[in-house]
Length: 388
Length: 133
Image (tube, rainbow over all chains, first blue to last red; front, side, top):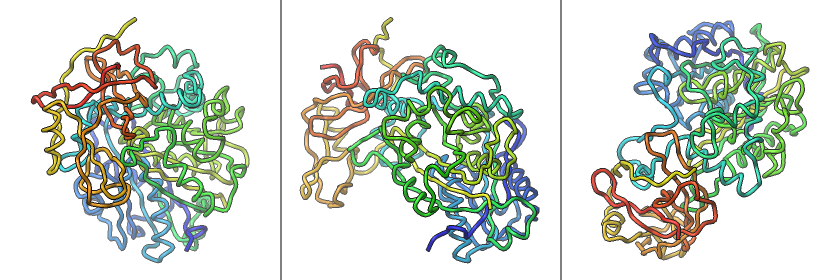
C-alpha cells in the first residue's frame, strides 16, 4: 500500500508568539490546533485523529485530547524529537489511507525560552536509560554533539566554516521578510565567523534560536480536502528512519536522511529536479549540509560547496530553502523544528509565502527533519508534497 | 591562545542493573568492553545482548586502552569551564564517547593517538577518559 494521493494537508498554522510568558504549553497546543482548524475551514468536532509528540504535556495525546475536548478514533504520540511532526504527516496519511480516521490534527508547542532551556545544558532522560551512564559524565549537550558531526565532516570532506556560515546567511536573507522572526537582520559570512565560538567549530550564529511557540497541521482524505476552500496540497510520499551509534560503529558523516530520503522519493515518484522548494531542518548550519547530501541533492561531501555563495537564497540561488527564516532565524518552538518545516512548505505550495521569497510555480516541495542529534541518535523523516 | 585542561564537576552516572562490572573495573583503572562470543564483535555502550547479531552470549573483555580521535569539540560555552568532548576509536575497533583531558585543548586534532586515563565524577565514580599519547 502507498499513501501517495491518499491524504491532503488542508490546514496549517504557525503560532505568532516567540515568547509565551503567560501561556501554558497545553494552551499553546490548543491555540495552534484552533488556528489550523480555522485555516482549514473545519470545526473541532470534525477532528477524529490526533498526533502529538514528547512536547505534549502529561500523558501526551490523552492529556491533550482531554484538554481540547477531542473525540477521537485514532491517536499516535510517537516521539522522534524535532522530526516527529514530519513523521506524523506520514503516519496521519497512513491512518487516513487505512480508513482509521478522516481528519487528522497534528500539534507541537513549547516554551523553552520562557523556561530557560538551551542546547548547552546536559539533559538526563530519567532512570533506566541504557546509554546515559556511559554518556552523561562526558557533558554531551545538543551543540557539542552536532559540533562533532561538523568537525568530522570538515576533516573528511574539507567542508569549511565559511561554507557553513552561508546557510545562516541565506536563512537571514529570508527572515528579513518575516515580521514574526526572532532574528530579522541580514547577516554576512563574516558576522557568523566573528560571533562567539560555542563549541568548536560551531559559532553562536551557526546555532538555531531558542523560542516559544508552536504549530499545527490538519490532514484529510481527498474527498474532504476537495470540499474545502483552501488550495490542495497532496501528500506524495513520506518515509522515516532512525539512526544511532550502531553499537559503537559510529559514523557522524551521514544522517538518517540517507535512508528516509530515497524511500520518500521512490514513493512520491518524483526526481530531485522536480523539487521546487525544500524545507531542511536547520538546528545548526551543519545539519543542513549533511541532510542535503543525504537526500541526494548533491554528492556526499559536496554539501559545503552546494550551500555556498547564496545558493540557498530564494530568488537568486538554485535551491531555495527555509523561506520563513527557519530555525536559524525565525523560530524553533519546543526546541523542535519539524512542524515549521512542513508549514513553510505548505505556504510555498499554496503560493502564500512572503512575495519576496515565494518560489515561482512552486508545485512540488520537500520537507525533511532530524530529531535528536546527528552526534549520537536521531530520527529522520522526509515528506514530499504537491500542489494540485 | 591556549585552553589548558581544567577539572570540572562531572555528572554522576546513574547505573542500570548490569553496569556494575564496568564501573568496578574503572575504579581499578581498567576499561571493559563487551564482546560477543558468537559473532566476535565488540560493542559499546555495554549491553546484555549483542547489537550486531542479537546473541546474548556476550562477555566483558579488558580494552588495551589505546585509540585514535574520531571527532571532538572543545565546548567553550556550556558551563564555566571549557572541555573537550570526543569520540575515540579504540584499537579494538569500537568508538566510544569520552573527553580528551590533561593537555592544551586547542592542540587536539582528529587522528591523534590517545591513551586511557580516568577522572572522578562528583560522587567519586571513576570514568574512562583519554589523554594525548
